[in-house]
Image 1 (cartoon, each protein chain N blue to C red):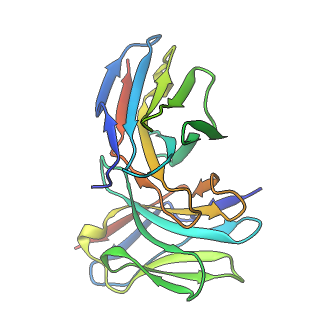
Image 2: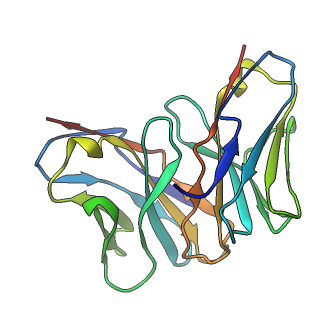
Length: 114
Length: 113
């Protein structure tokens, strides 16, 4: 079965420290990978995507993500966390074989303490 | 601002009733997706339309239905409402390209009492 896993329900980080939000996927074919962020009472906002090419992609608000094909992972990272980064983060896969099929992970709540 | 408009923002209704949620996609986007998000839960894909035609179906109950109109706006109809239908309902739109992200509206919060 095709799936996206975010193994951590919650990640707690001190402000100024680096952060990582994990995502692994299990799909057939080449996936297109996305990260979204959701602030309270708002819809999801697109952060960044990996389609092909450089394994390290940069996105909005200083976030970046590293694609690792052998480990089927696409972890979200930021070198220095801000309190304003506190939100719910979703990893998603859009399958190459079907533009309609988009699989979301279960979400990870990121909490940055001052 | 994502460019996706959802109305109403909040809806409170009683069990057994029927409601209609509306979504206007971003200008130029032909695909519309509907998702349900329960409290502290992930996103449950309901249904997708492309240029007026149904393209994919997810975990959508038979009590729920949707359509996309010629002007590309979409409506999600929920009937015989139950307490468990209380949730945030999101609409998202996209161009057809596989490498394009979804653009989400701010959702409709449905409360069934």
